[in-house]
Every structure is written in structure tokens, then in C-alpha cells.
Length: 331
Image 1: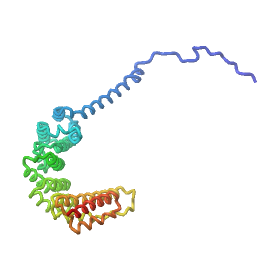
Image 2: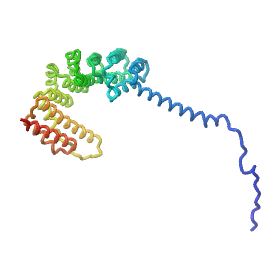
Image 3: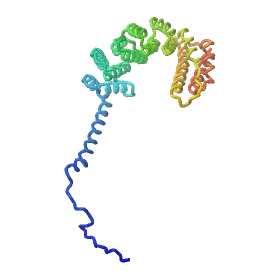
Image 4: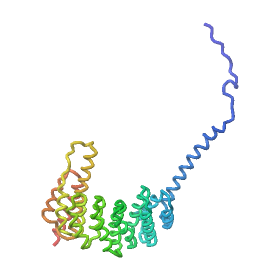
């Protein structure tokens, strides 16, 4: 068979003709990637700027005073900065606390009900709770009494418990402790379960005759979470009325692990373990407040948790029993 004739190739035959790039091609090659990079850089700079507002407290105020949807992010960053190791000077900044209180009050009175406004109010409450000066209490007391907005009221009530602890740690007291107690007692009478539960916890931190009397009432609340928090509050105050509630919490039985992959069952088991661990902490609070071992019925409940299937419960029970043994051994 005859071989096919080979035609020699010239340089012009090896490559297509070179044409200058079109404008559309240049746009796709350079402009579009450049715009993407520019957007990423702008977003990063924005978050970087928000994250470093703590270097200038008034920068927070200016940002929070602007009427835009991103203000809640500044409130969140402020709360985090106050909570962090660099928040010491901010915690005692009275002008900042007063201005934040004004912003919170103005936002609550604005009539805005959207998610952005709601989130802003919640984070402003949390930020005020991180202060360690009495000036932060007034705005929180005002919002704790705003039962028409239970979500903000709950954030204010929770923030008051943190503020009270911070004031005590700093050797200070609120300007109007009776006013704080009255506001939280009012919140504890709300129909909103979460608000009532938060109020029960905060009343234990606030203390005082009125708070304790209300805690005794809440210890018989039909809602489990409210009863449990009331019992913990009574334990913190060293009251014998805490015993029944703590025994109830410690007596909760672990669910059988019949469906390990069932998320509902796992959630229930997690909550039960959390309740029991908190009950053990409540017994420790009672021991610290009374400087006495717990009553026999409560001690037996604590001892029974030493064989609990949850490791955290067992370790918490062991630590508590050692604490009680040391107290009993003290002459």
C-alpha cells in the first residue's frame, strides 16, 4: 500500500492567527476579579473596624446612634469587649454607660418592631450588664418593667444578674437596690415562661426580703424551669425552702438510650444532665451560705448521683461530697 503523502508545515500553519483581545475579554480577565477582591477587602475592613471600636468608646456611641441596620453588630462587639480581658476600663466608663442607656431607651420608644431593632435592644442590655458601676442599672430596670416586650425584658433581667455580680465583685452596690428587686419581681409575674424563669434566677442574685418571698412563691410554679431557678435562688440565699426543689432536680432519671440517633431524646438527656449538675451546684451554694452540711434527705440524693450514667454528673457529685466531708470534719 502506498504511504500517504506528507505535506511539510510552515510556521504560519502551526498556530492560529494572533488577534488583539477584545474589550469584553479584558473586562472578564481583569475587572470582574478586581471587583470581587475589592468587595472582599471592603467587607473585611468593615468587620475589622467594628471589631476594634473598643479602642475608642465614643466610636461605639457614634455607630449606635446611626440609623442603619448594622447597629446591632456594634452592640454585640461592645458586649464582647466589656466581657473580655481588655474591657476593664470600659466597665467603669460612666458616660458610656449613660449614653448606652439613652440609646436603649430611645430604641425602645421608637416603635420599631423589626428583627434588627429587637436584636439591638437585646445586645444593648447585655452590654449594660457587663458594667461594674451603678449607672448601668437604671436603663435595665426600665426595660425589665417593659412586659409588652418580653424578649427585651428578659435580656434586661438577665443583664441585671450579671451587673449585680459585677457590682459585688467591685465592692459597690446599686443606687436603688429596692428598685431593682421590684422590677425583677414584676417581671417574675409575667405570663411569658422564659421571662419568669430568668426573673427567678435573678431574684436569687439580687436577694433581699421581697426577692426571697417571691422566690418561695415561684418554687411552686407549674413550670419546671421556673421552679428549678427559684430553688437555686433560694439555695444561694441559704434558705431551707430550697431543699424540696433541689431534691426534685436531683431525682430526675436519665432516659433509656433506646434511640441513640434520636435528636429529641439526645436533647432531653442533655437537659436532664444539665439540671442535675445545676442542682449539685445549688447544694454547694446552700452549703456555702449556711456553712453547714445539707439536710439528710438532700445529702442522700447527692450520694445517689455518684452512680449516675453521665460522667459530668458523677464528677460534680464527687467534688461536692468532698466539700461536705471537709465541712463536716471541721471542728
